[in-house]
Image 1 (cartoon, rainbow, N blue to C red):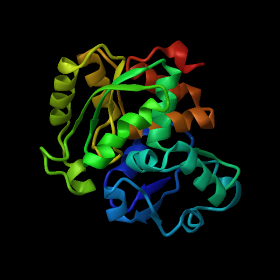
Image 2: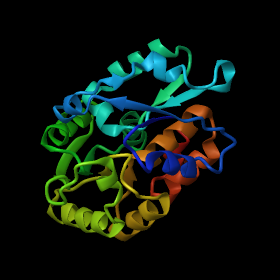
Image 3: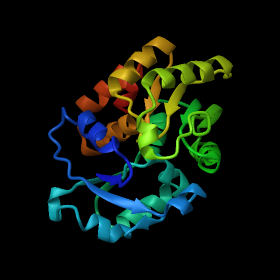
Image 4: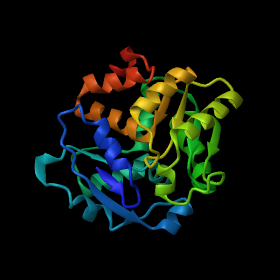
Length: 242
C-alpha cells in the first residue's frame, strides 16, 4: 500500500477492510507537490521508483494499492497504471479511483451522486473522469468550502452524521440514480457506516477505501470476502461473481 504522507486515516482503514483476508499489508508513504495538486495535478515526491523500492522485494508483493482518489482523477487511470507498472513491473495495481470505476462497471452502476472534500478544480475534474468510464455524475457537492476543509486531517474529522446529511440532500435533489459515491481516502467512514447508509438511503453507498479493498480482494482472488463486502452494500451477489 502507498499512502499519502498527509493522510491520517487511510492506512488504518484499508488494513481494517482487509483484516479478514490472509494478505500481509506493507505500507509506504509518498509526499507530493501540494500546489500542483491544488491546481489539478499530481507529482509524487520522490518518484514512484524510489517509493516502491521501499516495499519488500520479490514475490512478497503481488499488488500495489495507491490510496488516493483525487490523484487518480488528476493523472487518469492509464497514466497512473503506466507509472506504477514502470516503477515495479509484473504486479497487479489499484487505487480508489480505479477500484470505484471497476466496481461501478461490475454492478452496472451508470448514474451516481458524488460527495467530495475537494477544492473547485479537483471537484470539477471528477465528473469528466467518471464520464470517461461510462458513469454519469447526476448530482455532486463538495464539502471543501462550507466546512473549510484545508488538510487531510480536516477531512478525516468530518463526522459520518454530516456525510449522511449531505448524501440525503444530494439524493433529494438528484434525478434517478444507481448509487452514491463518497470520494476521498481521508474520510473516516467505515464499512459498517456504508452498510447502514446503503440500507437507510435505499441505494448503495460506495466510498474510496472500501472500493479499493473490494478491488484488491478481487485481484488477489479472495472472492468470499469480496462478495461479502458487496452484499453489505446492497450490491447483488451474483454480479460480484462475474
